Structure formats: structure tokens, C-alpha cells
Length: 269
Length: 353
Image (cartoon, rainbow over all chains, first blue to last red; front, side, top):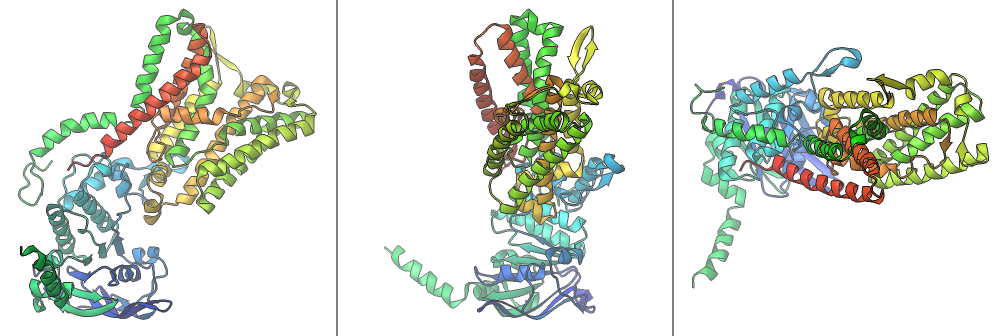
């Protein structure tokens, strides 16, 4: 699990220093700091409304931060548009996956960046290359698709997530932001996706894994950033927190204890 | 392919063989044109058995002719439907373009090729307007093109009356350059001594080009994506608005081709030409496997849908049936097509677990 713990020496791939974002009078994010290193997984945990989505949008270039600095390879950067973040190697896999269910896997894989062959009016979508690359890239992630021609809609939720991850990796992502990739999945499927996150990490990507589930975050994460109501509850390295502590902090500790008591009473008949 | 691979693959390798067997069947079923192919074969067999005129070379030339101009439009409309939109102005636009050819050639005294070029420019402008309005406003294309449909219908009548004083444009055959235009758009080609209309060649050409573009180019990929999920496709960098506008302009260009063929062949054009045809194009595209929701369909299927249409229309005439039955058949086929498309889509989308 402790892969690539050694390259802490160099500058982190992505660093957040005191990032804040206001929407009018609403402070959506305030003073958020963490690091994303190559070959490591940084988990961002928080309940609904904690500011996870805003943070993703800041990282992926949808929003500009109001305060604070974003550093890429140690250099301050600002992204004016999602395309700029993408060109800098920050790829975001959104919950809705940006995939078309009725289209074949290989068509989806290259959607928007289709390889072409031929010239002039005969320039065409190089489908042979596309199918071949799709099969190879998915294979490298450990996904054995039987037929790249099958529609994405026939894949299971976990497989779809994996295709989206493989696509981001293929198109040169160095930082991979995953927006709640396991939230809609069953236990087994979530396990599949966690394995692919580990795969991406082992291939040297910096992964930002956004989730509200500490049981998914703890086994795969190297760093944990906890958010609550737009503020950081701490930025911990793996060794500093046990799963129980993480779960406790996530649920708001006392709140969970209270809730447990409240729920237990009526069942004691 | 990974027979030697061990643990990390989450799925046991032996599951592959069983799934592959289903895969072939599934792959056949999800071909959008399958239904229309079966339909075309059944109808061909039915009328061929019943009527000797239908199966004669002359009969074939006749129903292919009916299918051809309809087919050119159906193919373009199918592309637009796959891209997630309708064009109700497509029918009346064939009238607009034909009338433009006629008026520019006869009333303004231009060479027929100038008239045809002017007509193309006008058609592309209308197509652009349709597409631009749809992408700009985000309103359903159904309502936008209903608007342009009614406007064009009014313009067709109004301007024809203004220029000719009647509701018909006559004398296109006298325009300079008519014979070269006739050769290209309205001549016949003799096969086994039977003249076939050249429009059939245009139809086959349109189908081939549309099919190639759809399946083998980047643009084709964008058409499927835009129709399948516009927001998702925009997120991955597909120029969805440009794709939509191009599709509307393609439909308009097809209407221009059909309008020019009509004007040159008939040499006179009624002001109400094409009105009411737009739904028939959509019917042909749906019989050809296009989903009304977009994202799925085929150009070859739409061409087959037009063929089904042409065969039925002429077959009923050859059997001396009352022509009223034609619409009954058409409606029945449409229902059947929609129901089977729905099944196919469900099957294709059914998650494995």
C-alpha cells in the first residue's frame, strides 16, 4: 500500500494553499490546503454540502478560486476554463461520466478526440486504431472487455467508471479527479473501482478521490482531506488516522453517537 | 485473449465463451437497419407474388422512382434524427427550392444553373436558421421547425402568386442550360431495355455518402453523441452546436436536391409542392430504425424505409386496391417499427447485472 512514499522529496504534482471560493455572500470554501503527489491517492471526504463539488470545480477549471493559490509542479497556475485544466493534465471523471450509453465502447473512448486517417474529404475516423487502443488501454487497467463494439449501456456501473478512468489516463492525465466514483455502486462493484484507482496510482498518476464513504477512502488513500461546511477539518497522512477515527470525524462523531441512541430506543420493545 | 492471465482480472476467464455466444446475436439485433430489411423483404415478396406488374422490370423502375426522391430526404432526415432533432420544414422546403429554381429561371430569366445555385444558397440559409435557432434557444426543434414550416408554406404561395399571378410556375424547360440540367437530374438510364430514373442513382449515392459519414468519420461520431446525450458530449469536447447546425443544413441541402430534381423533371412547379411530406420522411426514418429520442439509427435503414414506402404505395395501385388502404398500411408499419425499435433498444441497453 505504501507505494511511492519515497518521492516526497520533489514538489507535489498539485498543491492547494489556502484555497477559498465565495459565491456572492456565501462562503463555499475557505482555507483549504492539501497536496496531491504522483503515485498517491488524496481522498477528499465530506458529507453533502461540505464543499466537495466546489473544490472539484476549482481544481478542474470550472471556477476560479477567490482566495489562495493552486500550484502545479510547484508553479502557481490559474485555469480559466476546463479545457485549460485538461491541457495541463488534470482530468476529471464526473459522476455522470460523460459517456453515451447507446454508443460502442471504442466510440465513447475517443469521443471528442477521434484519431483520423486519410486526407482531405476522405479523412476518416480511424476505427481500427481506436478499437485497438481501446482494447489495449482497458487491458492495461486490467479490464478485459469482450467486444469493444458493445454499447457502453450494457456495461455495469463499475466497468463504466473504469472505462472513464482508462480514457482519462490514455489522454495524458497526470492528475485524475474522481467525483464520487463509488457512491452509486454496490459493495462488489465499488471494490472493482477501488482496484482501478489503485491501478491508476501505481501507474504514477496523482489521484484525487472524492467520496463520502470512509470505508472506501481508507484502504486506498495516502492522504485525507476532511471537509465540513466549506472548511477543512484537517489534512492527514495515512499513518495519522485509523479507519475508526476517520469514520468518526466524517460522521461528526458526537452526532453519530446521538443518532445511534435516538434510533436504538424504540426498538427495545 | 488472456488465457494465461491469473488473479487480477475480476471476471473469471471462462465466462467469456458463454457471453460471446450471446454477443453475436446481440450484435445482429442491435443493427438498426435489421427491422427495415426484414420489412422490405416481406413486402417485396408479398407484392411480387400478388402482382406480375409489380415484379416486372417496368414495375421495379416505377416503385424505385417513388422511393428515390423520398429516400434522399429520408436519409438526411435520419441523420438529423440520430443527431436528436426533427425538421418539420423539410417537406415544404423541397417546394421552396423547386419554386426558387422555377422563379429565378423563368421570371428572372436566368440560366437554370444559376437558378439551381441560388436555390442551394437559399436552402442552406434556411437550414442554418433552423439549426441556429434550435441551438441558440434550446427549444425543441419540433416547434422551431413548425414555425419555419408554416412561414415557408405562406412564402411559397405568396411569392409564387406575386411573381406569376397564379399558384404554379411554368416553362422551366425553356430556360437556358435546361438540357444539361435535365441530363443530370431528370434523365433516365436504360437497364435491360427498361429506363430507370437517374434520381435512383442520386438516392443510392446519398445513402452511401450518409452511411460513410455516419459510421466512418469524426462527424458521424459527433452526430451519435449529440443525439445520445448532448451535455455529456459537450463535456468531452464535441462541438454539439456546430454538429446540429450542420445537420439542419444537410437536410436543407437534401431538400434542395429533391426540389431541383422535381423542378427540372416536371418543368412546372405547384406552390404547394412538398407540403405534408415531412411526416413521411420521419416515418421512413423510423421504419429504418431511428429512435425518436435520437442517438441511434442508420442511413441505410432510412433508405430501406423509403423503399418499403415506395413498394407499398405502388403495390397497392397495381393490385387495384383502394388507395385509402395505403395509409392504413403505413400506420401499421410505423407502429410495428416503433415497437420493435423499443425492444431492440431495451435489449441493447440492458445491463449485464
